[in-house]
Length: 427
Ligand SMILES: *Cc1c(COP(=O)(O)O)cnc(C)c1O
Image (tube, rainbow, N blue to C red; front, side):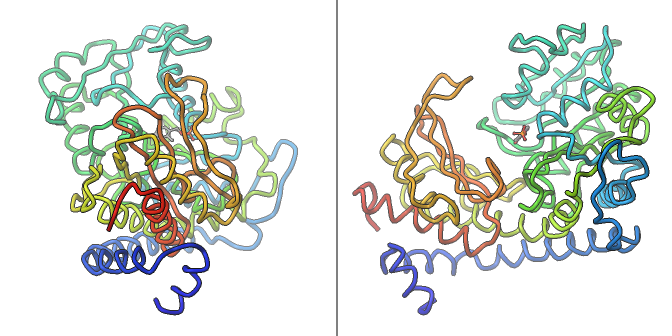
């Protein structure tokens, strides 16, 4: 710490903030040890899948054009399928982001006349247009897919009675979002998701269950596909890309569901056979390999932030002692000034664009101005240390990522320093 401190001081951190950080760390050492155990298990899981599928240098070769017989791409999909314990996987740079992956999974498995059910309340912002909750050209609603939603009970529990009543002869697919996203409900544990899936399947055995797994991968030792999900879907710009994947999304699930997704993504009849890898295989393999430890570092950062800020009087979601099921940390800062100071600190600690100051600005689709701090190698990557939030009550920043724990720690300390410098907190 002393050697680090000399440098930290030159970077603008005070001895006071650093000492407060060290005292905080002492309190949470036990939790870090638990995270390391999960990371160790998930590392072995990925490693075993790579060995079993005989990943070799040949898998890293670039392909172009149609991409027929793309050995590296096909092998990576087998690795993903083995890690998620599914029959099949679609892992492609042609899937541009998480929203796209979810859109493919939904539109491939829902036909006109079918109904989609969300038993966990309103889905993530971008999916609302996909479904047609907010009207949009090419939404599922336009294609004759209806949508039903059952909200969580006031305490955050599943409304089993409501869900039973909502499932009907048209219900074809049930979507469960694991992470809270920008909502205030808690993130679900995999075992909670498993209970919900078991209930839905007891009401309607042939219903397809899809889990939006964004931000949840490798936070626990099991994934939703281990507890009955027919499809798990996510973005490679988040957890499973390990910070190295420059683009991509994945869908792991039953052969039947994944085949349909491949036909929807490329074309009926072509499916998984086409789709050149464009030289991205090294990053996708290596990113997946690193993901368990990158996720562990990000989770440590989230826990550190909650334990740093909560004693200072700021509400944290999850709170300082709660168990974690994703890598997102929300901190209610209570004012615009505090949000700006926090984000300045995160930006000032970045490896890229550290010299710029984030300021609130207008964003399409938001009713308030939004502030964002990110100095990332991969544009917009929230696997890298980043913070953002809408400038409105309760003035909460959503903080996530960090490719290494050391960087996450520095960024969070820097956010606190900027708050102290602005006279918004005293230690
Ligand atoms: C990020 C996210 C998405 C969408 O992913 P993008 O890559 O931003 O399109 C969907 N659902 C959840 C819960 C997310 O966190």
